Length: 545
Image 1 (tube, rainbow, N blue to C red):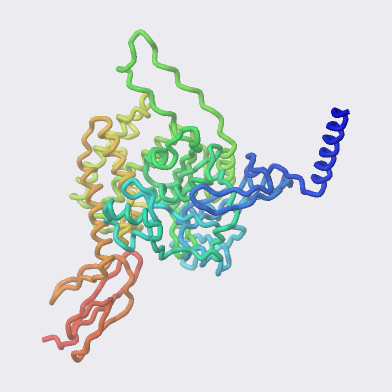
Image 2 (cartoon, rainbow, N blue to C red):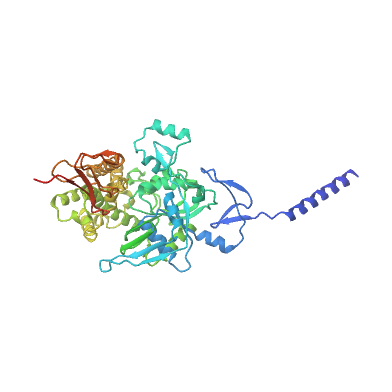
């Protein structure tokens, strides 16, 4: 009798449970980017952010496919805007999300027409016609900053307070947790509480030195199935990413490398001019090089080279999106050829970028100068020796001829002649006191030379000369002190281009400019405010004798 009562109670309980489930929506598993997500209706929390979100139900296979094809672009420089505009111009294009790390840029996008414009610039057509393109989404990616081994506030926060901060000061700021952020977002403006999905297809076009901080901001959204495609100057960024962002190989995403030769410039925040047509070579880096033969036991042959694995789904999606765009002229390249193309571009940049930054000149000014030519040959002699000694190129045919000093000099001078009116990116960064990519160009040669026992002293000197000049300009900007000569002679150039007002003191009146009081009878006026050349002229109101 007792067993029958217990069985009846169990059946009644099961009936009540089934009846209750009919009144509640069935929880279904959400698919995002082709990967399994959380159960719908559950509340989760993003890592390192504290923002909570609730997953939504989705059964529409078209939405799942659209999210799996979505391309995220980190870095709205000239190349980033060209890539985003070109991908959206293909037939049946994927959704493109622009990741912005400046709140002012996000607000400007929301207030504007929400479009990117591409113009074709040429010497024959002075009136550039722009082609607008819409259909972009925007999400914030607030960069983090590594200082003395700690993740601190954004780079902009420390830039306005000086970059020379002691470790004790960093500890104080990090532990206080109440640091004022002058660029802090308005929640309503950047949708900080919005659901931001995992990122599986990411194209990074930032400066090499900004890559770590930018990736730290979205690290929690990247998965082992994700692919990061780096289209930027310099070599050695992936090693730094693995060390500082993804030290665990089990959670490390896949990588693609892109080498762009397009000539582009940005007239404004959401426009890009294509001044020179080039191409983009994309592929995977070669596997880790084998150890030198001397470390092998002679009776045993060296280990075989592992076979080339097929591209992961996310890498294939990025490759398809880039190669389908005709304006990008993108081609898929095998790992060995990609590495050689990357090193060729590195050799060219190792000459043009630091020399134009130090001599404050355009690319073409490096030509037909005996002293500069001698210096170029010293640089290329070290670059050639280091590249030809790399274990990654061991066994590759014609490496000695392809990377000989004479051929590298021909490539460098040819590029300088074709871009003789251009201002190099390193010169532009130095003039504004920004961090340059010299550590990933000439610094890479120095680093690999040390590993191989080669002393690249000329490149070592260039690295610190460029960094020193950039620091000087940064310090001058932070002090807001224009340098004006006394009496006759040329005045020191103001490199940052912020001052467009004319200030006078006449008749003994005191007038301040940037909180500095000038001598009586002195006029400071900025003339010719072009991007690449800004001069300060000093005149006197007294009659000239």
